Image (cartoon, rainbow, N blue to C red; front, side):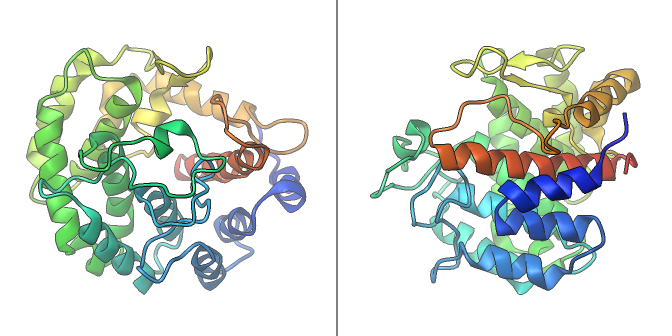
Length: 298
């Protein structure tokens, strides 16, 4: 299946946020890193965190771990370039981490209009492996080219928390928590002080993941699943060893074939506002390019 990048660019021009357009331009060679950072800055708060709907279903103005995740996604696109903003968001993450080193799923949301209930009603006093794992995994992608992130104390504390929480995972773990824990272990297992333990934990979690990599998201849409690329989005890491190569290749084929006639991609989960629904499509379009590019498909 051949991806039509011209059609994808047209979809983003018609429907995408400026951030998604800038990320797409950078990834396809027609834009620069500074433009991506400037677009991310539009969601930045004076405290160094990110809000303002950078996470489409969390439209609160305040800084949130979910906003930090999306900022780090954009900063990972910059490689081999870096930005001081990445270390600055690590400072913010350190400031809002709980004593055990984990992040709360969300901080209090005083302005919950059009925010998903799971964000607005989250317990800010309890650490979440789900959000800490995926934020740390994305930070590791940035850290691969940015020594300021690689050596930041927040990442070390988050790593220790995630390793400890991953040891306790069992068959009762929900699909998203498991997928994001595996993403974290994949990222941490590539290098660093916790690499050996991360690989050991990945091997133990193998029993919880079906061979086809499909786990239904409890409480989600009927067709909402965590899939192989949600567990192991990038090549070269230990999480890819959880799946047969044919499973990964079939999933990449499916991703490429998911481009719609309008040029964009869709998501398999429900959104909580019309704006979020469209923004998620722009985000999904860029993420498809990120994953297919990493796999050598573009």
